[in-house]
Image 1 (tube, helix red, strand yellow):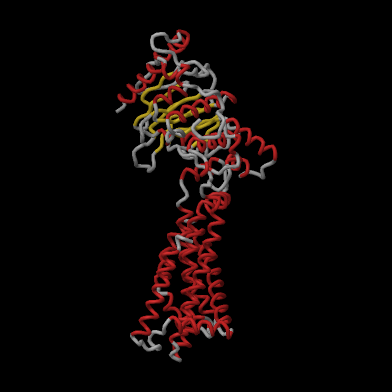
Image 2 (image 1 turned 180 degrees about the horizontal axis):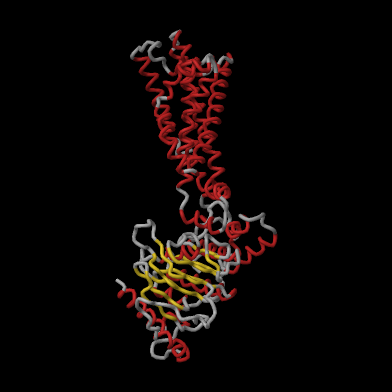
Length: 303
Length: 249
């Protein structure tokens, strides 16, 4: 790990050993990834998600739109989207395409000008304690220790008990910061601050996790470590997640399904049938590259 | 210490030049007393005990004015930051009240409050109010949107957001306002005494002027400057203690 003194959470995925040399790639991996190359060709105007085995999706965005002023241009323009329970979906798009606004609609931080957001069937009317939000910046409180920052969701409701402290320490240990619980954010590196923010989002035991480009400011290696942490933590509790990013590789690595947004609309969507858990070296697999290329094409096509 | 050495040497050189100028050019002591005479006057004022009551009065005015002004400024800053409507309504009036030269209010305060400490305390409070209000307002409104959204997501109440997020986040800016206010408080107290004081360092300057005791005026400058430096450094020390938790290491 780049931040001295912290034991890594998982055996460090040394990049040199796990991905195979060109020409003799792991055939199993290639076969497992094969489906990813063939995206559902469901581009176009009336884009709808197929019904999810007949049951209602956990998160349902129904014809949602948002504009800052009633007469102004729509930032989010009639989007339909559904996330089944336990799935990780990614929203991909350039800056200013409306993806962060859509995420804030899903969080209840903004209320849609039209349409509705439903979580577990109930319409969302404001910020909801069932939702954990990880912001673009770690948004930690500099004057509190890492532990107290993780405890914040609890301490805003009641005086934390010993059990809460224990739970917070556990969350910190899960993101590899077990030894740094007493440090304050200014004493932590950028990657460690992002980890504290991740641990804090997990503290409220949320049913839905929303991520707003949380790793965009980190270096590539730290970002990959955090992506693995995130997947591991989501898998642990079977969390449902919506992850906003402008990084194509990040979207492909994290998502079960990726949507490309442009000018407030979803212009492309595809399922990614890559293996879970993500094997080491997946980023260098042809199927991964092909998925990235398709998404890049969709983004370019969107202008 | 080695960093302060050049500064100290410059001070000694300036004092020596001043002394030499007075002696060589035979400057009348009424116009500019030499530092040695100022020091002698200061010494006799301290030894005779005449200085202490005046120092105590000025320090008390300063402390009371600062306390009233700071509490009022902090409260008003919070109120205006929390209520944009109230802010739009009141800000022009608050600004106007600060643009009136406050020292010019001295004679008015004399009529309202009479001679003594009260007018000086009132002027000091009025002067200290503004930097605290302005910095509190700025600090509270500049809390970044991400952290405010975080508190909304966590279901924090308005009071919780103020006490647990906005005030702690604004504390460095508020402390900077307090530092400015402390310096202004001394000015307020001394000048307030010019107008209506019967005791205090400012009143003593007026008394010394009436008997043409220039070296006593200079001695009082030294005392006022020393008082200002001590109080300023005390606030700096408090600031460092309070903000210790905000910085690296």
